[in-house]
Length: 484
Ligand code: PLI
Image 1 (cartoon, rainbow, N blue to C red):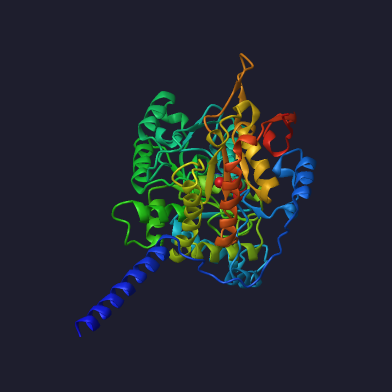
Image 2: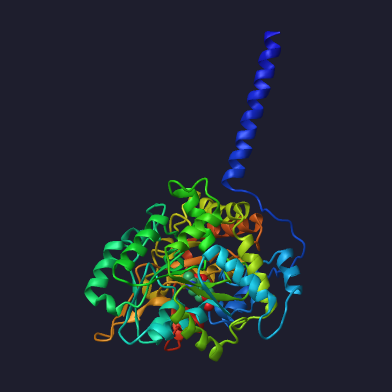
């Protein structure tokens, strides 16, 4: 009898143990919360074919036809898979020039989540930036941010403004594990305002998550403190909201007091501290095209709307079709689903964990939408002048058909105007941006395995030199050649 009880106890223990393991696995890396209804064929190419394609592309992965890529991690922007509900919504498109019903759904969804008074549709994020900065900037005005994304910076500078990155110093250490490495440095923010004068700072911004800084989140506390600091000097506060739901998920996971709050409430609180936002819906809107600007200021909204009519379209479509507006409004609701967010952020983290176990250097912790390989430490024998990030993107493609993007010297190195010397960026990164709901976890395992294989023979990899380059934004079209 005692043996019987022991056996039952043993079984119960075993069951609890197995359940804990399963629960542990599920909680840590949940499986895909969807099943696949439509599939898209992707090509497997041979080694010889890839060698030829990359040579034809001048060793620049931007110039490889997408059909020759197996796993495309160039960007998470506009590459999401839409749901059956979004596709059904597209059939409900009302393509009236003015007052389409889809605009009213779009407006109501954005008001619910973001809480702003005026909702201005645009066909992508950079148009919202263009409208905002061409309206508020005078030459010499300064716009602080944690890190400006390149289109944000370009739109500020094009209008004569100065874009300042004020992310906290810890963000520059790729190995430091902190919960909110996207936070802006509040002291630096105040000292900038005092130095240039608040009258020269038309708005302050925060980008959530911080794409240019490794997809790192910003805490609610930091959003609140930024708002307080800017408002102390009567400066409006805008959020670059591209990846707002991923940021809210990190707040729920990592910041005290938010574990029990629904993502919608966390998002509402984040935006309650701001006066407006710009958003590329191509990220957390879960669509292939679209964006918007939202704000409370009546006068600014009127000016922006007047410009919108000039460059994008009537205020109820702003460069989008009715069906696009509908897909965005459904996508913005779907992205709040915690089962989705747990899987989404977990998929990125899981890739990072596999790479970390093999000692592959990358920016830690993993961000919400991407793993950023640390090319400087991956290929320490290649100096920055020989583009280690490019060498790694070329290797990822030729070895396995994987496309990633260099965020290093090809993209950011600058010439010192006085001495003519090259100023190299602090970091040489290669971003593996993961499209939303597109690749399975087994495809991500394929990515991890191939990066590890490349890492194991990293000493054989050689640097590159530029053959041809454009005067601005050279990384998109530059041609290179491998060094002997
Ligand atoms: O690509 P757009 O114009 O819809 O959005 C521009 C944009 C603004 N802010 C941030 C933080 C972005 O990440 C961003 C676009 N990101 C791209 C294209 C990316 O590959 O990350």
